[in-house]
Length: 246
Image (cartoon, rainbow, N blue to C red):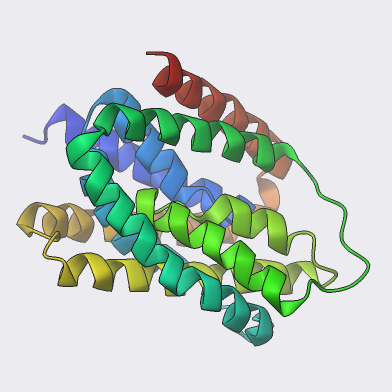
């Protein structure tokens, strides 16, 4: 018989995959917020699993949109993201062993900020951001991805302000997430933090992510984007506040 915690985790995976397919980000945040609030698993475990299932999610989502990827943005965001990811993973390991309560409070703050970003529709810049700014944004996303496997909010906010087509924004974000999740998985694996429990949980979650992503992609035009954003906003603000004040 499947344990209640396992069913709850799978439910979070489905919800996160649906939201990420509709909005372009939030898979990692939704899963890690739900898992931490419900006490299903520790943050480091959740982040390791999220990296693997998020990679499956973005690869499936990119099947039909990879030709829209803006490689210049991917390249310069990655310049900042890749080294910053290492810093985030090191911070996670240190805080997990020494200051876990602070790690949870910091996660709460990140979740609240992400919830606010989800509801903001930023006006596009008149010109594309210069390359150093792209790298700086990548650094911020890299640290968050290293800590919580949830570097989407700053990257999404940055990309949606760029004066390029919406399809290019979404595809470029997905490509960046693919690099982020693959790199994080490799770093954590080399550090010896991927055990059989992580592998089994990820292996059972990936088919769920793929199905949820494909089904959502097929019916996405019938799903009201604003409703999804408002629902996720309320849930993230509530989860973040809980982690901060408890």
